[in-house]
Each structure stands twice: as structure tokens, then as C-alpha cells.
Length: 147
Image (cartoon, rainbow, N blue to C red; front, side, top):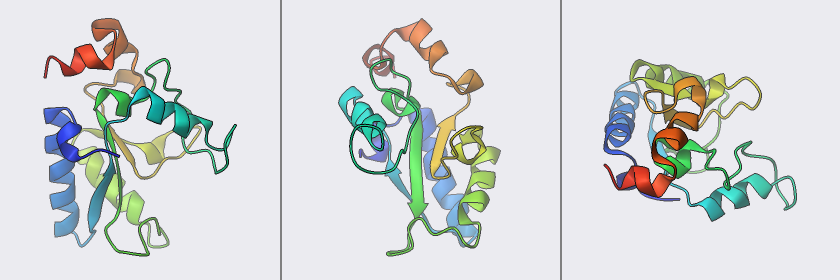
């Protein structure tokens, strides 16, 4: 888990605006996850496969497949202690709809694995793929050096 300052500046501004708009609608949101290292992404990928826990991602870390590794994605939760991931009131769908107005892709719209707390910037992720970033920059480090 990293701070919001680790996001690409464009994505950071959208994340901050999402928090503001959600608060104005009575949806208290907190940013929980931003930039991930390759090792952190690999550990998450292993969860539910080779290590205990439930599967939380389909993106391996070794191929820079997660937009979190590029600093163009973030995750949120409800900013209410003990109710962080409660969704019986469709909280995440409401937050997702607000995120879409900001040009963010909402993980609740993923076809295979629904990831309701997840957002990524569509301007950096055409087709919800890191392929464009990898083709242009090669590695997340080279991409981040140009912010």
C-alpha cells in the first residue's frame, strides 16, 4: 500500500476529485492502494493460488500486467471503520458511477473478475491493458521517470 502521492499526477488529481465528489454525495471514500512493486503484485497474484486467502487479482507482477505497477490505478474503500467493504446499499456501484464521470474505468465492470474497489485511468489503459504502456516505456520505472 502506498500513498496517493505515488500515483501519476493526472490519476492523483482524479482520485482526489473522486473522494471530493463522493463526500458531497454522502459516500465517504478512502484511497487504500496505489502503486505496487513487482514483488507486491506477485504476492497478490499468488494469494488464493499458492498462498492462503481468496483470489484478488488476475494480473501477474512479472509482466507488469497490473496498472497499479504503473501508478495509474488505485483502490478505495468505504471510510467507515468496520464497514470498509460493505456493499448492501450498492455503495461501490455508486462510487463506480462517479468515477466513470472522471474518465476512470471501474473494476466492477471487469468481465471476468469483478473488482469493485478498483479504478484505473482509461487514458493510460486503452482496452484495459498495460500493453500500450509497456510498448511505449518498457518498464514502470522508465514511465515514472517522465512524470
